[in-house]
Length: 401
Image (tube, rainbow, N blue to C red; front, side):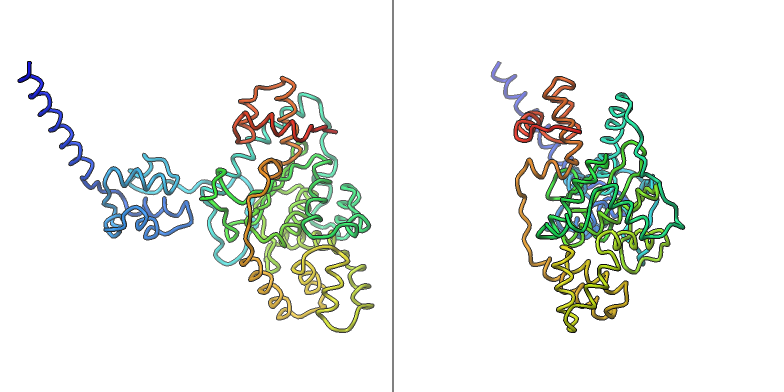
């Protein structure tokens, strides 16, 4: 009996030894596939290789990895393990909406973008079916105008539809409050507003501003706007107004809010957004009666219209009131100030409603609390633990119009 146990022990040691050898064996993978996988996180192969192997990252770059390193590589890049064994990178996924970006060599839309897009598309499919089950009417302002429309007329209709007046804006204190005010008015009219700075609910996956600042999904029943929260807070309100303008034209797409955009539709939506936030006549009147110094004029306009210095400078530049050099100076100053700011996570339940659209979050939590759906289903729609759905409902007691 003892001899048998000894023999079994030796056999077990041999098996474990062979497994260790197998784990240490280097497998050869395609460097092109590894480069593609690294790119899904916005990093180079060399950057990921140094995280996978501190001692010999050059072997990883050559495509020579152990099984343990392959597992780590897949985890770091968020790419399914089996994909790393492909002989060539998979075909780039086709964008299901228009790409309005025209900047020189725009960053390709990667995994983070598509994860955000798929999540919102899933939410909208469910939301649309709920609305149609309750025989909701289509929204009359979606696609109300065409590309030949006057920007001032579109902006005026947006203000009227959303109930956003200069008086209501003047009562606010900051551009953040203006963003929240416009977003709330839009949601009251049936537009879902999502704002997030990360993909997959992970701080390890911050969204890239160079990749996209926002996108819009036009739909007669369930239109939605997504704002990249990783962008400068000073830019949020203009991006929101720009995306809302797209809905009035019936557009779906990834936007380019750059002042240098070469896309005709983007320039049109930029003009509508500028007129919506800072009407030209009101701005010129204030400019003419303000002190002569440019900085004083800009400061007074910022106080009057309650938007960021960046939006005011942009409007002044568009109206020919400041030079391009002055606009660039302000742009760089704002960008540098933002880089120094530290962002905090904030209240979880307030952030939850911002990430998932407050209207959508309220509806899901209300249905779960009333038994219209399970808390597990609600948690899946909101990407949270089911237990937190009831906590959110208790904190908000949502009442939908």
